[in-house]
Image (cartoon, rainbow, N blue to C red):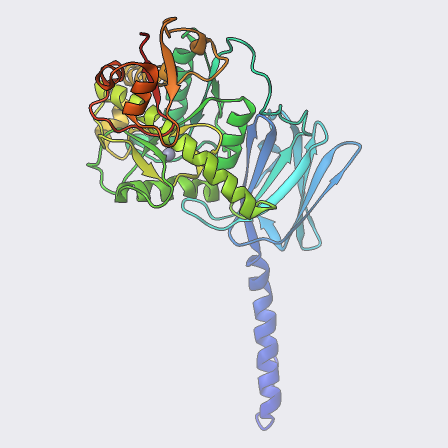
Length: 448
Ligand SMILES: [Zn+2]
């Protein structure tokens, strides 16, 4: 304690301020940003390290060689008591060890990597259930640029189906009763779907996500493109705010707006996942947006009608094994469906927020039925729309029949006339009830 002369009011205030300042010091030290946890997810070509903090962090990151390591300085950060960096790296493929130490008010984390990895860091703002995060992707050097898309297709090649199990890693997707997680259920269904399709002659399925890690939406379609997929199927099991909502649905991309309120709600939910798992702060803008947009719109139009046909076939088959939420193919602005170069559908296998459906979706028998139905729908669509050069394209059409793809300006009667058959024969052959045809639709023309 100290004494002040009462007549000197100014010095009293100064003295009080001094007491306050000293008194505040320990408080401000303990108010440093806390590092709550460090998590690691391994993806096929990168390892993601996530630092969970209780406030936004400022950081510096750099790499050192010999041995390879990535150094992260977190400004004004202290670890929570008992935090042990060493356990984070145990048993990892690319990371040998994790070390950390206080360094003049900063917290320095050293990630010892087994090979040279390129770090890409960004921060994410809180979004339920996560708080502030610093994400560092440790990326393997690009082994080779992806094979060019335009390449002479092998004769009688397999039709390639890209199966995208939604969510993963940091992003659990919908969470059902008894902690049934969408990310696990859809990966199980995706694996079954792959087995079903691989068993069909002329088909090959590729899983976009092969384990429990997150992939940004655009990365998913890029992976499918690298596999030269003929069709992209995203598998989900969603939740709605009301637990009684149930049934499967199939979505394709809408050009604007969603066809129903549920569709809008779900699209927002699925798209939000990129903020959760990861590319929220990374700009993905194109260098030449105007041209890119025009090209994208053109090729999306062609694929949109194919996507709807594929969606219809899958929905019809799903209706055999599960309740349907919507009897027609819904359209919504899912980012993951925005692929200009392949028909894309998104299957909501059911509502995990519905206790009964959550239970069924986690059961092997129901998963098998759902996977079978999706596979059957895809097979039917592909047999009617076989890609050029595929084994399917060489099969099925009897020698005297022709496949005709509707072009702009075509009418059913004009096509009938051109091939010397009647309109009613064409309709019967193709299961059409009216004369309405769509550009891109494929008709089987019977031989005469
Ligand atoms: Zn989902």
